[in-house]
Image (cartoon, rainbow, N blue to C red):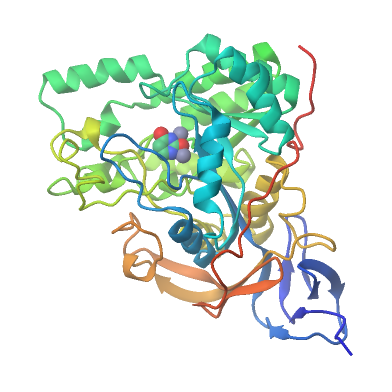
Length: 472
Ligand code: DUC
Ligand code: ZN
Ligand code: ZN
């Protein structure tokens, strides 16, 4: 007779965003079927004594296989990017599908799906980057894509060729209001940055550290304020992604105090790195070039406070990997002589959760429930992954079993991404995911890959828990 359950995880401590309790977790047909004790027979039992049983991480902000300019190649596609994510305790990642100017988003999505199909070790769900908000895109294409389960758009206030002006951002927000999609904004003032780049270049100041000094806090703070003001004018919620510093956080708190629905996200680089890392030797600072740039110790403290006090809803990796010592990466021919051509972004999908666990939970800054909220439950709710993000009967059996006592030192040689370095080389970590289960299938067992490529699928999403379609 077939056992009633396919798998039981026994003897562990289950943590959700609201509760921590001792229970066995039974899985059938890819979903969580029961929680309790003495659940009965299973085809297989995993002993989780002394371990945490957590929802698989959802990384709501990663870049994979994204076109990044002539001659530049992103270091991860879907295979290596999702494998690396899986080893870091994630079961879902949310990459961006980039609309190239003059092209349709549907066309871009078809290409991304072709790259992802059959190659993923975690589930994936795409955000859409809108770079060309033509009337047909706002009026027809985006509403149809929202109906198909692509329910979030990212817009940029920086980067030539990608940035939208305020009127264009208002147009995208209008479409979000009508469809119930959620708008994410990269907040940096492009004109200010251009001005500062001009000044630096005129002075011959072109080493990697100039990346930080040309993108100052005020450029991020001003754009954060403006993005939230534009959202207020259209009356839509807004996600402020990759927030790096105290003054931007203060803007978010003020907007919320005015009654605005603002979601905010920070990332490991803003609590672990500083602009000092961009100084580096022999252009090594290029390894830490990302936007917004890492700031200083006070900014790190402000980000920790925001993580602890609930200002931040999301802790994503913003994994945006380029190789360092490679003509297609950081040291491309132009990037090797001028910071302006160093591709922006750093790897981190595998280290995001261990860093937050170690620096956050193990050091007593946050408790395990807040860890789960920031890394799984909030991303699921905010981005409409309605069958994910917690340990509850009926949800997808996406589970990471963590050893809270595991001691590791981050070494790129042990990671699984396609880059050739990690910005966190040598960081000591306490707590690491030992076993990772995707849709009831054991993918990583005691640190070894046992699952197959292709187990991860694309997931269409519902609307965000924060939105509903509304007329203009
Ligand atoms: N913005 C991101 O979200 N990721 C990497 C680079 C960038 O500017
Ligand atoms: Zn961005
Ligand atoms: Zn990003």
